Length: 434
Ligand SMILES: Cc1ncc(COP(=O)(O)O)c(C=O)c1O
Image (cartoon, rainbow, N blue to C red; front, side):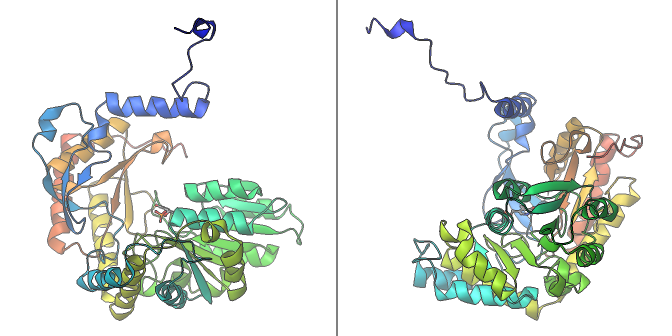
């Protein structure tokens, strides 16, 4: 044995030691595992997650009795498949044909050997669909925000960002080095009080989600546009949950308000209302040229697999041909919201296919999720850090492919399960803000 070995302390193998942030994460991991919450977090899907899905509890569950039951058929009320196009026969056929012709990947980045004609066609189709001059795609919505914000905002710029903006915006802004001023959720007054103090010539941006991913409310785009005009600010909107889920034919929040020409950059995801994976940024030709040659996610990361691009193109065609898909989606969300509110449950200010049900405590959120699962209904529980600790919730994502019978079955099950947990008699929740 090496005689010097004992002269050194043991090497630390616990990554959390020495990092306050990782210790916080470790605490959360222990909390979920020790309290058996992992059975509804990271549940396993067997087959296609469409209107229905075959799902089992998460394999980390220690109580093996429930898992021993095996997979269960559930109605899917937790999918980002807003327009219901995932698995659409035309989307699958287009992706299959592209798979045979191009393979599974282009094996390269966009700027070098990673561009095929499907990428160009998809970007043209997206730009036209969304109502912008040009568009560029990235490998995810997360990558789109990181790439766009780190490319377009820089040290010396001031960025006003809604306090409930998505994590990808927060991370992208950190990379940019800009001076970040967070404003109260949707508060025009809070935005204006910051803008007022800045010189007119100062480069500044207002950044907002179009539809807020946890609360399901919609940005006050007309108000933001008016302020940006008065105070000389650029506007960036992240429409991840609005593309193919809001506005005429699903063209997004700017189209919903008729304000496409006032929004400088629109980012979004291709894996929610649209049936693929990836992200995009749309804007003027000059802005998108800047991003093509100046954003890291375009230059240093592989491009979308061609079968995905082909499926997305077909999805956009279907959305344009069939406005009834979005009509059905909005009928479904309105019907569900009204039904849930009639039980005395709190859907916050939801006005989109994202419907939160605010819960009095973490434990109840997981219990309700589990009870609904056993009734054949899939919904997601959401807690800290995705939302603040006193705003735990169930989050329902509505899809156009749910039938009237599905909606009624959901409301029935929710009524039964929430009564079991005495939620409908719960005292009013303390709204202490996020
Ligand atoms: C508002 C918002 N922006 C961006 C993203 C990231 O999109 P993607 O899943 O395509 O990376 C999400 C993901 O849920 C989101 O909710």
